[in-house]
Image (cartoon, rainbow, N blue to C red; front, side, top):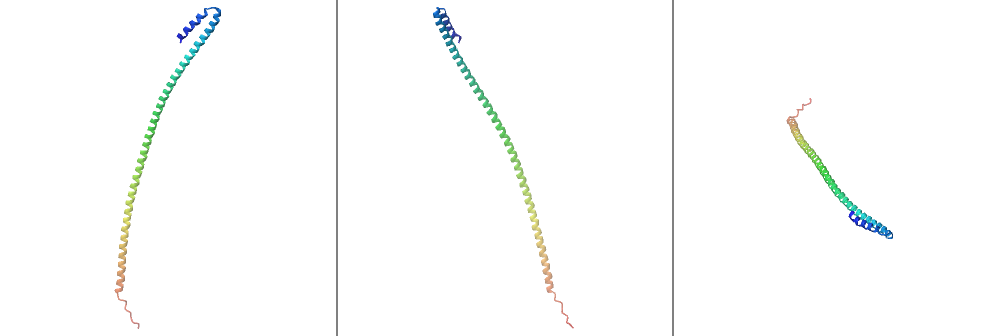
Length: 159
């Protein structure tokens, strides 16, 4: 940037050594040269600012991408942790449910066996009762048969 200004300053100095009428023109040329230099410097500053802004933007995008990747990784880890915890819980619930089902099945099996035994005992008692009733019926038949075989009491004549 200084190299660009140097030739213009020399041109400004050369015009100032001329006469007074030429001095007015020299001042105008110097002002024009200063404005031109300022304009070029301004354009250069704007270019540098744009480049720096682009660099900052690229860096910000890069940092944002890195941050986004980090957040995604952390979110993925959190999701995996939550899923693993959910799996552990579901496995525990399933194990509890299987144990409860096994216990219910065992209780049902024991109850079924108990009912079978009670039914067998009732059937046995019914059989004993039938046998007892048969014996009673047999005895009653014997009593009635024995009574029917006996002769009726003799009728005594009435005097």
